[in-house]
Length: 528
Ligand code: G4P
Image (tube, rainbow, N blue to C red):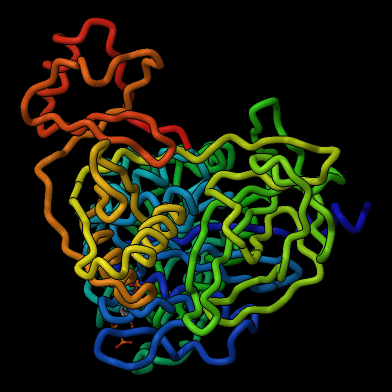
């Protein structure tokens, strides 16, 4: 038992989130390097090089240089066991990011110092704020010319609606970058450029030291003194409670590429964050330190490895200990089972595991029984975690296979990709199975669908864009669908469970439907 408590107390599970190119992959690699999880951190993916980061495995990600799906990495550092959940860097995949955040206890938000909060990322970061988990900000690329740090903080506060508390403060940027002032220790960690690639030399100087002015030069020294005075007088104080409830984000400045400020960031991150916290179920909460094992599925990914053609369900362990070959209960399937080939996945490398604890993420082979949001627990526990909401799709298209001989593969492919939550599929009541209506939150998801159907299922498709922008589930049980009085541009469709929905081209047609069908009740989100 004490071993269980000790193991769980060591766990930290966070998601890392950023706009593409802000440096998420680079920072992840440097963090892994501290844990000794990889030997070389030089393999940062780049569009122009053939090298790819360990967390970036899907072919389409490599081609586009963006992360489409999340992957999971684990490393040990200073007695801690840290799980990093990588998230897609593009807002078109915000739903995937949201699901991943459900499995995380905190999030690290990486921002490019020269750009601040970028437009495309606002939605992604807001998803993070919505979850009310602690958000720790790393403002990266200080070795390049960056925006004024006060403006960067204001940007975060205004755009994301979260208070900020700088933990350190940059001294210059780009060619003038001299390091950071650590507000807690009141000392300057100085930076020496060395062509960028390797870990830079660090030197710590107390703020009151006589050497500081010499080190920084008179102008930067004066700027720093002015900034420190301003910071101490203005800005939010560090308040651990506010951080832990997602109201205040501690902000660190650094440079991932040169490995500057990464270790102090990691150390402080570990102080700020907590081990796994209790999780809500539909009938109460589950204590992570409980003897009973419980977990939920937050991600399903088919064909991660083309050679294996398998499907992996990723689970976040919420309580207790998982042991290989243990018998578990799948709540939604209402049956006992053994999880086969439990593994921890480090991008493409998989390692079969013997045990895992609350806070850890495990991947198990899924013979097609799991859905996103499902609970797995020990039989006597039978908790059921609250489902993960789906986002209302905003773009729609009709999808058919080119070659009618490929019907089976088409149905299998679209269904599997939909089960992963990568797209949502619907059916027109009168249409056959060889065509579906696909709904997505971001249009890039269509590209992923097309690419994956061609590459994984060998099916070429024809996509026809549809003009709809809004979707509503009809929640009245007893309603005669055929007798609904709808505007000519409204379409009736069904989801996979046979529920009826309406597609609208405008808000106006939604009001029209409600006005002309007394008692009709519509809902924006489907139930998972
Ligand atoms: P992402 O996962 O958020 O998309 O970003 P990634 O880490 O891949 O970094 C994007 C680019 O920014 C990379 O350059 C990377 O080397 C660079 N970068 C990351 N952190 C820093 C930093 O602290 N300072 C500077 N100056 N650059 C940084 P690239 O040219 O796209 O790739 P590569 O050709 O260098 O591999």
